[in-house]
Amino acid sequence: MNNYRDIIKEPIITEKTAALKEQNVVVFSVDPKANKTQIKQAVEKIFNVKVESVNTLNAPTKKKRVGRYAGRTNRRKKAMVKLAEGSSIELN
Image (tube, rainbow, N blue to C red; front, side, top):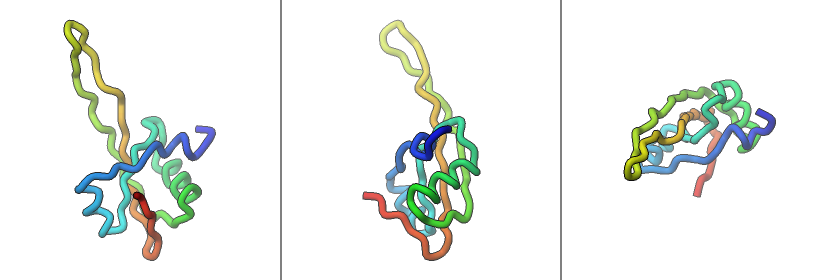
């Protein structure tokens, strides 16, 4: 990964992630090849915050079909980043 912005794709904003925000946890969609250390470094550099821990999960692909053509959705990886006390990220 050449760039930190290649690792962090976008924040995931849902009702569930809004509830996690109260616990100082932010959820991001990340590159499927990125590991926890790379994710931690990328978040610290991009948002200038201190990261306490990173939990990741590989979201399963789903079978989809259009007419007679069958396929699967793209791979996705989510990262739940717990920020240190006093750090915060404003996502609008």
